[in-house]
Length: 525
Image (tube, rainbow, N blue to C red):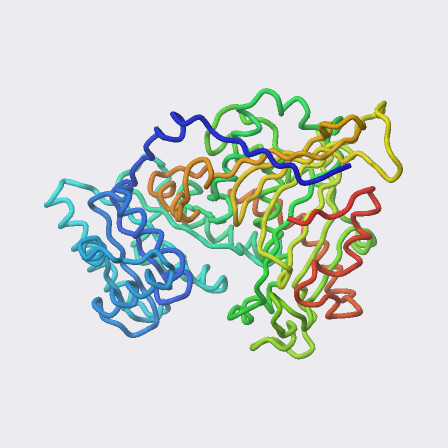
């Protein structure tokens, strides 16, 4: 077998040249709670600036940031201009920046202080009155909780009690009020149910948008199009043709400045309960009856509910924890997790995990799904790889040492978004030899490079009230039911040896045994 043949796949020029124009966000004021924090600087403000430049923000759109850092409006605008420069979005056009800056306001204070909510009420009253006077526009209110998870419940309660975010049982009510909550939604099933109890008592479900930025990525959304808009793939998307599925989310960075959060979370809460299980659900779901929020989300929940639960003694067989030690990355020495600033010297927090899951449905019975994620791995890469079964009988002559490679369909989520397919071909020669060829589709190659982030897609969807790419409460609880037994088992019997892989490696060596038991091996993304 020979490897390395790659054939690019292009889209027709007329398709690439004439995309459907996206829908514009409706008039609203976005209130960023935690506006002086890292999320607002790195993700939210650059996303909003991009949206404005693309004409996807309504003329009547403003931002009111609330944070603990003591700043006036002008200082906040200056800090956000610096954030744009740091994010490589830039604000080179003076007119564009001036227009964006004119939409930004800031309130400094503690969210536990009632005076903050009183000042916010005054600001919103003025903004909304001017909007009606100027354009007759009725503005919605979009609250973004860019806060630590332990601040969600008290902040939601105060927003409700202050009257700034009233419950609206009618989804068609105008002006609308919506709230975006970042993950993690709870730290286990019990806490997630408690938080959901508070949320459901204060707000209607259609007002709550639980955000997972992975679901805004183009390839993630394209997974549904690939499956359900192409008749050649759906007939083989089942146990008869698929041997196993691998979902990898590899990070090359260490814990960085997130030690305070990460020490209490670990890799399973940080990556598996939300990102990876959402990717699994999209891969394994049945066709929805329509491309509507509830129809899509219902099918995803069915998948999560069908994941075979772990018995306590099965966790050791089907789940593996790891923690990185000192090593090298790109030829430079890097510290181990326990040497990172803010990490306990005897920490048993896992920075790597690999899990084998089974889905007990007609379509997927007997097909293992292998999920893995870790920090300080050799490269940053997220992909979903579908490995098909080998042909039941190979009639072609094989030379010594030759073996046929199985077909693999891979969805690259990041950093180079695209889709690849590998298959066997005959090498042009008088001697009969086979080679593995690859067909590769790249978003950048077919549609041109894009600097737009997943947050941009999700923010506009929220302004439009489209919850398709957001997580419903029953999906959150179903995901916790999957990972809670793993976390409980590791708490009861911590791993005996940490660290167990060096920075720059693909995780603990035992991870190979986990997947090899099913006649497979990990791909290198």
